[in-house]
Length: 112
View 1 (tube, helix red, strand yellow):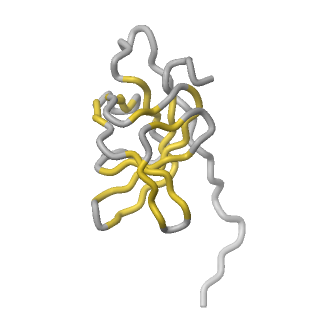
View 2 (tube, helix red, strand yellow):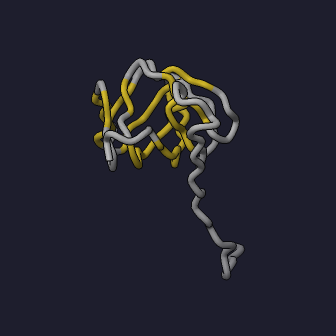
């Protein structure tokens, strides 16, 4: 729902020519350029200065993205699996934490 508080998950990190590119999926709320977001894991606040939508290897500058959409941010230091929310809402009122993906250990190994 776009009217609910923002909840996003960082699911992919990529080192590019402009620094770290962080891919986010918006689960609820709306992420807008210029807003402040908070990393729920580290409690650090970040201002969204550049927001892009990826099309293969092309970047499209956008002003906002809504629920279900995937976007990318530049200059956000985080880990894959970190949850971001609206920094303007006090932590005591809203502090979501999404679970990271579980990747099991491989059952077969091969040495050449």
